[in-house]
Length: 441
Length: 75
Image (cartoon, rainbow over all chains, first blue to last red):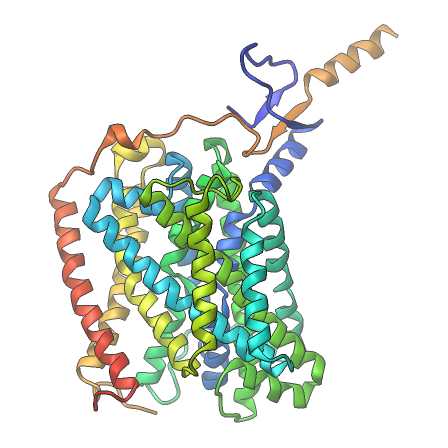
């Protein structure tokens, strides 16, 4: 059913009229439709600025100043193009990505993709809670209290039985990230340098080193992550977006991509404040404490709270991507619209992901920065395979029909992205196989 | 009066009803069960084969790298 109806149009007598809002102009109808569709695109993009991303971007700024800003500009269209494909797939099929791989490529690839997703997601969740532990400790709250409270709150967030309630709360959390702009502005970065280094790629001062390459792959891995494909498609299916919503879902994704890259740039600028002062980078919480000495406790506390917010956003989105994917493959009921008693398996997977990751963080003392970077790299390595599945699905005329199937230019862009990602992965492989290929700093 | 009535009626006719996706009637989507598995064309076969090779290589190398960084293997 189209989402815009003239009042004069009568629905068939047998159908119940859907609940609707009346507006008097076409412009208002479009604006309202956009607001109703808005959500999955911004959430998937902003949740990608999770604790690992905060750490990676701040580290990039702390080690290389503004010299890696250009990479974010390059990743903006890539992240949009990749997620836009998922939007088309989700709207056309009303099914999640895991179900799609399972049904179109068979059980082997379906189970492999699911196992990969669950593994990387779980490791990523551990890093989210590790970041929460680190941040609450610096705020004066013992992690043994802070982490379980966060885990319980995150579980409660999804158990309300209302997609809309979950979406509104998460959108509010996304908008809290606007505070990164204020913090970056407070660091007073030289505007000319920021613009110049965003537009013009700059080689690293010490040449192509192993740590520079590792960080570049980590940035790519954190900006475009495999869970995002699964999350947005399932989210669109759960929200039951219609064919007529496609352009608004694309706009939502585009806004999300731009906002997320701008926030990521701000994180890099915050890190760059440490670079200019020649501070040694250990982790973003440590950097927040150092910045607090110079810029005051408000800046310190704001960065620590934003770290927690990033981890919370990442945790709910990543856990949901696991729960949706598992539910789709197992054929369980899997919707945030359903109460717990109607979708117990789906909510159990979500709660298990959150609680287990929180428990892992409370047991050992793992080297946080190493785990975070390794997870981002693992995600970066998995991404080419996820994109290949996506590309094959989007080129499938049987599945999408003439209207939604990839055009030639789509294929050129996507294969360019695949080649770029493979090239980065192969560079990493070369570095691992021959450690002296690239010098250490 | 007649003109006013006419305008009101005209305005009522041009009112737009906007329905939230979750409140709308379910839309007919692609029937995946009817479609079945993807046709294994040469392109699809080559892509999947390359993917298997890539994944084997990368996971092996990544495991090696992680063990190296953790200090279990001397590089």
